[in-house]
Length: 249
Image (tube, rainbow, N blue to C red; front, side, top):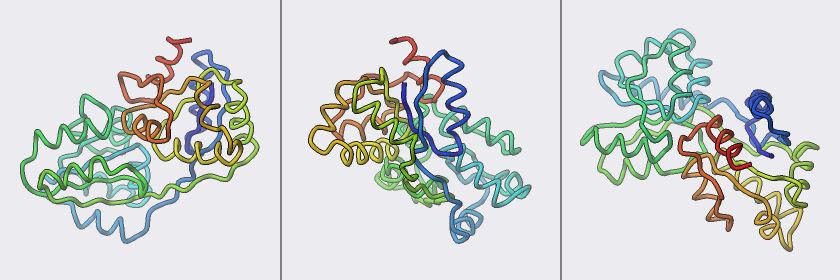
């Protein structure tokens, strides 16, 4: 199988997949850059008693801890903290941050459903990347709630090194049984590079291998790119994605 992951998560992701018996081709998709100081200042200014704060990834938690250090736990203590999934919740708790809510559906849609049921007025703070989908932010605005969208890290396409070229060639020549995508941006970046390598028929080539999406936002992106995924795991975690792919092999 093949997949792309942020460079900081690539090694552990490959080890996890190999531990489940996969032969893996993987490459870094995105580089992660620490957010601007002004964004962290905005976040600090949003903290208040009972303020709902949504963490959209473990990376968001990591960068807040990197910026604030021990103060991170203290500044979050009066807030109502929402983690998008169990991995993010665990990460926050390791930093000493109490997590109050985790949606049943560990995705942007699950977060939005939780927010719409729980909050009828006031401000919602989202802590995320600068390049995430607008599912949560648009839904919050459409529901009449006030939104503070804080980008604590930035995502930029990683250089197409030897590992990426090998992965693209394997996908393009049908040597992969599965190609897995773990974010909308990583999917669109990969398809852009497939288009560069195989301008005449990149989409036909992608239709000859099986494709998995970690969750609905990534699946929506793949569909918009012309390749509806063959698999979306019932739980939106990388581990569950691997398990369900293994179940189809």
